[in-house]
Every structure is written in C-alpha cells, then in structure tokens.
Length: 394
Image (tube, rainbow, N blue to C red; front, side, top):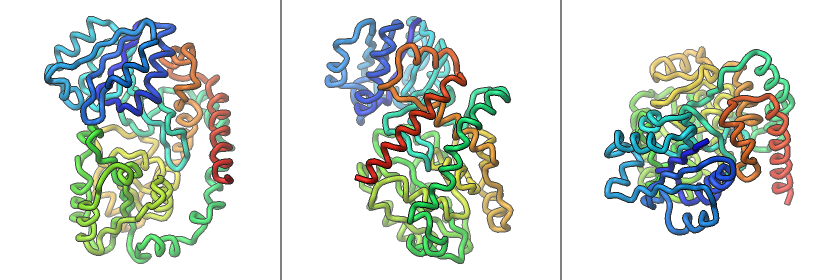
C-alpha cells in the first residue's frame, strides 16, 4: 500500500505532535510519501521537523521548494502539474493538511483530511484528531445501518445523560439566565445572538471557506441585518487571545454601540462561549466547531459557510428566515438525533495519534465504521474525563 501525506498548511506544532507519529507508524506497514513545502507563515516544515524524521525508514520525501510553493496554501499555481505528480506516485490513500480542497479532490486514491477533534461543550485532548473525507462537513457521518446507529446510541447513552446534567453542577452554568446575562453585560430584554469568532492568524489559510474572510466583515454584516430587538454577543477565539493583537477589532466592536457586546474571556478557553451559547437565543457561526455547542444546548443556528452541514444539525443557511423565526419564537433547533452524531464522533471518530497502532490506522483507512471501536472510544473518553477531574482538583 502507498500512503501520501499532503501537508501544505501543517504547522510545526501539528507536525511535531501529530503528523510525525502517523508517518512513523504507517511507514512500518506501508510505503509512505510526504509532499510538503518549506516553512512560510508558520506552515510547512523546517530543518527541525526533518531532523525529527531522520530515523524513519520507508519514507519518501518530496519537498516543494520552488518559487510558487506559497501558492499551495490556497490555490496552487499549477494544479494540473501537482495532480500529475501525485498520480506518478500512485497513492492508495492521501492524508491531507490542506486549506485547498479542490486540488486534493483530484488526487488518486481515497482522500482524507486530518482535522481537529473538538466538539464543544465536550472536552477532547488537544492532540486528538479525526479523518474526514469532506473538509469541515459539520455533523457528517458515514452511511450506517440501524443496527450500527443503535449500537452508537446505546454505547453513548450514559455519557450523554451525564453531560446533559453535568453542567448543572458547575457554578457558572447553574446561574439563572438573567444573572448570567447580567454578568456577561448583556440585556435581558433583547434577543441574544451568540457570535463566536474564527481564528484569524497568518497561519490560518482556511478563511476562504467562510462567507466572510475577516471577523470584522462578518460583524459589520450582522449589525446591518439586525434591528433593536437583537444584540450580538461576541466571544473571541481562544487562540486569538494568545497569538493575535485584536485591539483594532475590539475598537470596531465598541463603535457598534449597543448592537454588539464583546464577552471577555480571561481564561482563554472555550467555556465562555459554551456559557454564552447555553443562554443565547440563537447562534451564528461560519466554520467554528462551536456549532456543536448550539446542537448540544438545543439552540437555533445560522451557519454562513461554503462547506456542508449535516441535516442532523438542523441549521439555517440564510439570515432572513433565521431572524424572522427567532423574532416570532418558532425558530428550529437541532433535532434529537444530534446526540447520535456526538456519540459517533467522540466514541468512534476521534483517535489519539500517539496511542493508535499501525494496524488500527490501516483498519480505519479501509473500514470507515466498526462497532468494535466504540468500547475503546468509551474507555478513552472516560479516562480523559478522569484526567480533567484530577487536574481540576489539584
């Protein structure tokens, strides 16, 4: 078997903590090729990454360091030439870390995107991942028979029930809605639209999948669409707090007056967004995984994106009916089958690149679903929950 890693937007952190483990394991059982550009805007690989791979056998490196290597991050300057080169390799499987979805879709073999595993409000390890055949297809599941769906629901039932009631034990989530809104600086007499912002950094080349490539453009659009019955409640992405100077954005939000409020997040975690989503009237997202918090808390969701959303999440795609139905109190939320997706995702789709074996990886690439994986996923999730509890008690 031949496996190609196509990695134009892999960051050094992702490569060192995730991808190198996958390359090493798969190279023991398959012929592995790695197609990657040099470092640019914190994507690609540098000398440090290559040194970490010096011991690996059966790995063929293809470093694209020509003048046009920057273009691989979005639209390759010569997509036909790139596709032809990949065809000359002849991979059976292609594993991508790419913001460009059009070109990899033309590659031979089965193509999967290496994606983050987050599914708020559930916690997942930062280095856990999923393999997704359709980039940012939120709520996606492979075709499953009723027996498999029943197995997922049964395996996940206790976890889902504990999670639904678990937030009642947390002081911030126990607060009455009026008090929570007051602490967030939000009015209780207007419809609250939660707007979690996207990661906006030079290494994030995925913005072209949004309807609005900049957060400020999204916010300006929304303020033009709403009237005095609504207020935008904005949370910033945790990584923006760490790596981005958003002072100009916050000034622009302040200039929007009483139409928009920024919810400060000093802990730099997703908890601020989860709390906001719990108490909001509706959620507006582009491609952020906060869409899942909307499903969990049963909120109407508007998604503004060029990517697909599964019907099980029940999202709106146009703002006019979303606002009108919110205003009249008849807006739809995610149906009950959203729990089935959470079970599939957390017990089956998520895996740890450090713990998984080469045989298990190959099995995942060849069989998109196996009931046998559910038990291991349940044990992994329970172990991580215990780890979080111990960390919180320390």
